[in-house]
Length: 188
Image (cartoon, rainbow, N blue to C red):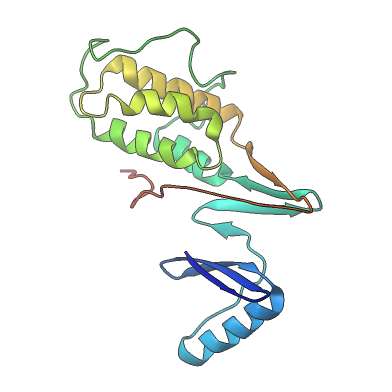
């Protein structure tokens, strides 16, 4: 993220590999794009629609960020596309332990799906608690821990259209901290 501030000009530029997002005054952006165009081959796509598999929907009330396609792909990867949905990501009052169940023979899929669920928390903070819980068993996952993940996937199946809404207000301040994994998820 690059930030430029001078007098009345305030530019915020987020760069990820070959994608650039800007948040700022439109005249300043036009000058920046023109200047970058002299040095690099660039294509200005104007309004943001997708970024790192996050769909951005604009309305008069603000923005809605969604990972519907990402969740749909995750469900397909885990063979849960046709699964039934549940109303909560984790059963209430359920305590997980390292001693629960039988250890999985190979925890690779478990770790991959947990990583994908971590990425989902960017627009789905409502699953953060359960994702935190299953992350605690990455080193030695069991069939019980896998069942908790499957329940979370059942929940996402019925709520894949949910997302994060950011409302437009006159004195709008947005502070965001995020971790973006080096890989989204691995599907064999």
